[in-house]
Length: 425
Image (cartoon, rainbow, N blue to C red; front, side, top):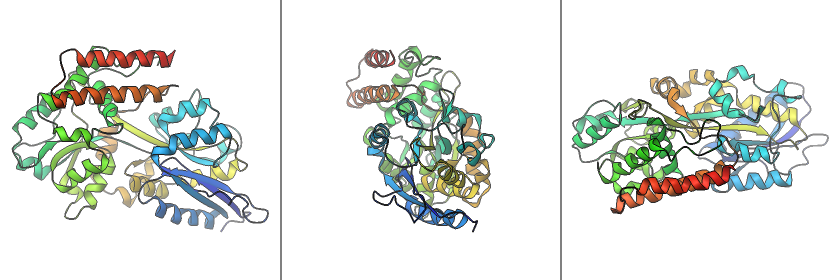
């Protein structure tokens, strides 16, 4: 073990995993406490138990961790930021960066003593750094990320009389209508914040965008947006591609159906792959993955999410916090946590570990990621996202119940755009 003064670090992140317990801040005599918080997910406690111990062996720094559920994470984080309390290190959901940065929640990781302790920016791709940088400030270190890929069980697809993955919207409809098997051909999640994510994908595939290039005004309500939402609704109402019950499905429902044989294909991140592989009788070799079907514009746009690690500016131990982040970004820990939560490591060397020793992961990284995008980073996006998600869900509900009339999708998007305009003023 290196000769360091023993310090205690309480680390907290936003994967619903948070490290740290009130009342544990004293540490050992003459030592320091580093608090960390993470957003919770299955398997993370085992990961942190192992790696905080290993980090302490290597550095003499003790890390205490705490988890917070996704449902309360955003509110909890903002409350901590406003009161200048909470952990030293926190997991950051990328879409929350503007609001939290505006409230003074994140240290500039490109300046001061922390920069020397953190991984070099050269480690990450430009896309990851674009998300991690807000208003010319590096607010977080990219931790893990992942795009949504079109995924199918080849044996089920072939049993239904079709083959290959659909390359465009027409192919998706044609395969669904030709499919002849006891299970369903295709399904995607319809609850929580999935409607806007799916709509964003259809929008990108149709050549549209959520906001204008300068992020100053909504753009999702133009012709490409209306066509995208109508196509999404028609997958339920006209083409009978999406089973009506899936409008209420969340992650557990879609993964249960996909792993259990109720459907042959879906789109999702690596969490879906992991769930499939873990089910009895299933294997990765059963699966094929590809970029989602292209829209009329020829785009195969897909959604990606990314989690980061940031340091709150009120920390008393910035260098220790930076060392902990640097450790978590080493290839093996980065691969281990990414595998646990169903994402890809942001450290490219993590893909060379045993955790990702399958060609399927290369397909995710090399063939799907180039088509991946995420939400605009703009103050007020949370309100816009919530409004647009509700709007899309209401349109889909009307489609499922047979109450969607011509012009309804356009009118709904216009109303959502009015809210977005007021938010962006």
